[in-house]
Length: 282
Length: 269
Figure (cartoon, rainbow over the protein chains, first blue to last red):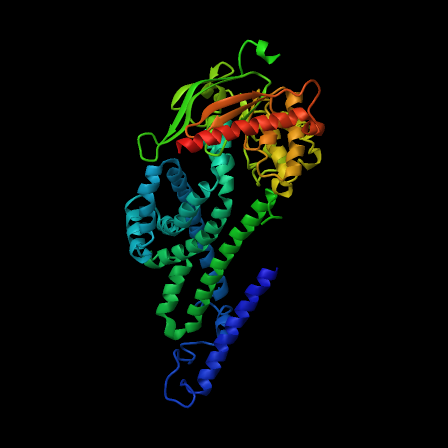
């Protein structure tokens, strides 16, 4: 509840700064008082629509002649993007964990794979996204599945890197103990290494969750997939001059989706920790 | 007497261990160790740091392989004994898992051995009773004091009734009072279960108080310098034992052996 209130507070703060700056710019005619130097961002209604207008646009029809409001339209688009992001999150997390286990299992794999995993994140997603979509079309993947893969491309990284660190975190005595019980490798993984890696994995999951939303939106934009927030942002950007508040509203929706996804992972984390009785310490 | 039994619990013949053999970081940790340990005995391994006592314990437990020699545990190769889960192990750090309750920690080896839940529950309750922590089964390890944690670790090591208990400075991190209390507890458990114990320590009074035999090791390479038999007569050892002249005699004997070892090591260095 406290967290929720602080989020609301922050939103109100941003809105107040937005309006304050706009008011300041309009009283000084867009220049610093007493000089002829222009303000960094123009404050006219086209560049910076009023917060009230942005919020108000949510309740207007999304298009002339359609009864659906912008808010409902954005919600539907966000749901579409959420599903892609969630699919990407699951794929990326499983892939990342798999990589972490493989790297844990063999030193050679760790040395061979880790540099590539790092390099993978230096490739701009914008460049990679159309390639994945094109490959997807030539195989069995639908465009939304391709977008999910793009999201997974961003999510697997923190999970693989932190996961490996977490799996390696038990001290040698703990591993020796399992050895003394003649426990097979898989049992040591399951009963010692995985539980021990939770403090490393949960932060990675949170990063991965927000990254999956970014990945999905970028994926939609660069592949032209219809139905999600990416496409909506693209379209409202191209019709900016006739309704700037709509672009702002859709960007806001994307930010909120990121927050929601982050919150879901945080809730899952709390539930899991509570179930294992560790919340008292956390 | 244990000597009359047919087979030693542990037989070490010509055990040597060389780490990083053939490199400039080569360490001769153990050399030509011969040692027989009878079932039901309490044996301490003592020696200056770096004498290989922990290494020897790990060789017995098949956690590392000796470079040469033969290790038999209950007549079997050490490797087979480990696969047969013939021994329980306790380390200096209790090594309990924070994501498990105290009871679940004790049940860990039983889980690995495929015991069903009811049997596990009954056993962990019994073990908690043995280490006098019956009220703490549902606690988390980190809610317990260091001494209590160590008792849980011992309960875990004994939960599947191994005939052999390997302990690597299990009380090393405890304060003196807790330590003496734990020593009494360990002797009581040893009596009640009849388990053979191999106990690594660097505390002279600890070795003298607990053991039937104290094995003094010399360093670099680790060799058996001497074996000191300890017998305080009939009756259980207690806090009074620590006041007996015989106890002081034994601690002196162990101390002198350790001094001789260090002088000899100093000459070779």
